[in-house]
Length: 282
Ligand SMILES: Nc1ncnc2c1ncn2[C@@H]1O[C@H](COP(=O)(O)OP(=O)(O)OP(=O)(O)O)[C@@H](O)[C@H]1O
Ligand SMILES: [Mg+2]
Image 1 (cartoon, rainbow, N blue to C red):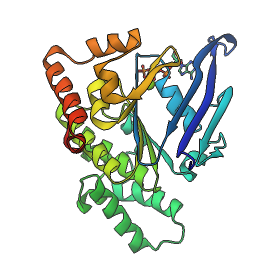
Image 2: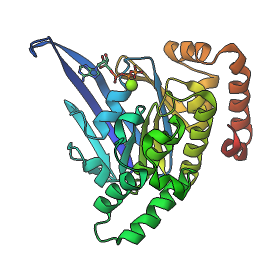
Image 3: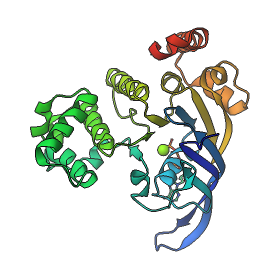
């Protein structure tokens, strides 16, 4: 069998909890024995209560947190745990707080150009501009955005810009940590459509969310975390229909508001009945 795009094997992360003076007072086991495999072009959703270790998992994969144990392999090769090495191996992370990652003093053109120039050192200026326009097109923004600063955009548009910037490094895997939770519902839906499009284009996604309905829409497989462990994983629709772990059952029962529940279950049903519907189901 060909090597998986991402293979996480037996990952442990322990944080030192420090007091005000910086002295380590206790240790917190944030991830315990996490293993998962993500194939090319596949989307896996990661759900779990606050503090269950979802962001720690994402940050460890991209090298922002050093694991105490375990392996992270890309295409079967061990990924060095260093900042920047994930990007070089085709992994990009999209953060929830996109405002913190876009320099307010630069135009969008400059923000994109810096990444493109770093990524493709030989590329001429005019070509880089074309590349920036094409990236904006992918996220549904037009060339006019190049001349404007981040503050001149709405929250949803800024999230699109940060996605365009992530795409500038030509990643194969996007790790998205609650990428829509700061947005209002209608903008959330647009950004989710964008992720669905990116998935159709062949990007693999590791999609972290509190929201089961969101994961159901984006990801064919789901991982449920609790207390730093994976307590259940499998096909998303099947897991939502017949959750086996008590925590997953609780999540299914409580996640969608009652008014959303019919939609969620109807969409699960449509996905399981008709594979073509899976593409269209929102
Ligand atoms: N840098 C850190 N130092 C110490 N403890 C940390 C650090 N980052 C996270 N933690 C702790 O690790 C645990 C897992 O945190 P993490 O941010 O991964 O959870 P999460 O599932 O992403 O939660 P949320 O849904 O609220 O974003 C929590 O108990 C958190 O307090
Ligand atoms: Mg988090």
